Amino acid sequence: MSWYTPVPVAADLSAELATGWTARAGGAHMLVPDGCVDVLWLSTGRIVVCGPETSGWSFELPAGTEAVGVRFRPGLAAAALGLDTPGALNRRIELADVLGDRTQRILLERMDGAASAGQRLHLLQDRIRERLRTVPPPRPVHGSARTAALVSGMLGDDPASPVAELARAAGLSERQLHRRCVSAFGYGPAVLRRILRLQRFLRMARHPAATTDLSVLAAMAGYTDQPHLNRDCRALAGVSPRVLLGLELSLDLGGATA
Figure: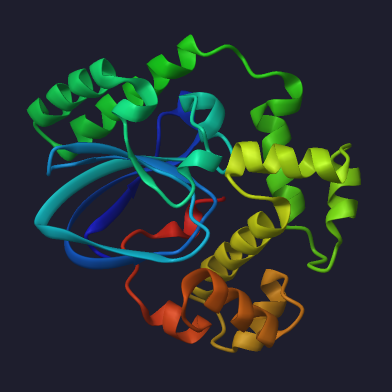
């Protein structure tokens, strides 16, 4: 993954954005769900909003394609962009369809005229910053702190905790929790928990000092046992955990939910 470089975002955007990144790529790549939404510029002349995924997806890029992007923390793109997150599920959407033709046209002109990937990343963050200034502040129940607490609850120590317990911990009914999750993340709490748990497994497995024993990693990540990990990995990524760890993913998603 030497072509992909994560870049810290500006301090005033760190509550909404998990990371920025720059890349030069070509050929086939594969991504697995991470609960996040990315906004990215491609040197092929596009600015794309990548909606949340529920399964692994593959794509190809022309050789030498340059890209820069920002990654929203899980559940925060809907309010920041005015994104119909359920409608964006498993889709790549032109920025014009989210923020309008004029916004896309102006930003494309600026990005195409920038001298470096770093400048393009600054321009993209500036546009996100401008957007955040124009949207009304979220109500407390929809705020970033509440969403962060919800994500934390999805990664609780007991993977067998019923959704009803998660709802009670959040001060919501099960129906309210489901609606809140679908609005913010694009899917319900059960899917969200599976995605975040797989991402935690990947972070742990990629640590330089990590054990290679999948049963130990599975327990550390919150799975009931290794078969539980195997089932979730095949459902979300389409391959076994061992194969997934051997793949060169097109983006390092390990820090997406940190």
